[in-house]
Image 1 (cartoon, rainbow, N blue to C red):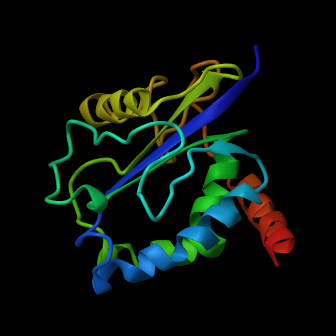
Image 2: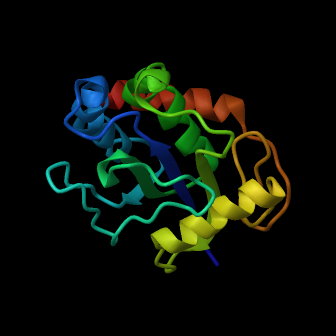
Length: 181
């Protein structure tokens, strides 16, 4: 059975959308989403309407392990599907998203919690925010397992511990840079 990698990120903005402190993050959203969609190995994502803050794959719910922020528009989450973990890593740490990551301390609160989680799903499995939240909470409570993992301790689609192929990440990042100009 073919699989895709589900990937969810969670962040709490230091201020609500509209505040000058987080405007740099908001301004980068279209470029970062475009870079994701043009990335090698990208399949699909929940699309956020920056005007309403709503997502196309349903309402966002913060994982229980995160404290609720004062404003709903401080919750910044993504949910996407990829071919493999190397594709996500190439997108995450290079290009437009990699540049944005260098500023995360300016925009996001720091918690001793996982800010992303990966897990494998069957090709025809519809993912939901609730599933992503459960996976992130599992990662927080149990550490990386075949159920929920991270870049440091990944698992393959058969549930076996594996290593992130760093050469593949570099090659995908170079391909992405060429395509995205």
